[in-house]
Image (tube, rainbow, N blue to C red; front, top):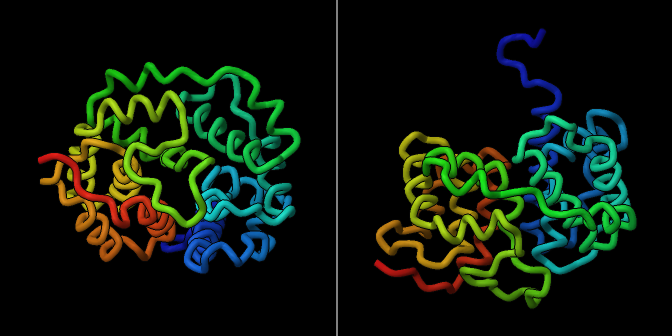
Length: 250
């Protein structure tokens, strides 16, 4: 049993891994994630579980900076995917999280991921009719899908609407206003992680209301919740898209 005030090992490992990813993003992608302590990037059970929890975002620096990850990072991420496949009763969110990581690995040249990606996408119709609160919660869990297409020019802002194709992204495009409502709700409830993840989606979407003040909202979330490296990770993922992008309609 965990003692009061202590952090469970997996939670701590995930936070430390997210910290290293943020550090790599901040440095411009020149610091390899594989330099992270062995507890999170080794092939021990805890390290693999931490990589699997953070998912495709472990490789976010390579995706955003259009660089190849260190071979060790690719190998650990691929091993995590193979070690923790979705079970027969896995939730749709788990299936999509797995799909995001496999897709990222395949795009970066991981040999086994390409064959796994050959299967059909999971269904996303279940997102269509969710209340906006539940939709925001589910999309926050799937924020690793909120990345630019792999063809984006290095160093260039992708701009709103530029999302790696997926059925989940298609739903997000159709429910931009609902995600904006969820972003406001998360901020009001001081749910900084959900707010940052929702803001990451909104950074990629057309039609975000001007009245939302997304740029100011993301800055506020960073000030209030930026001590959580997972919050910082989502904000770093959103920032290149928002830089220089005009606001949407009123």
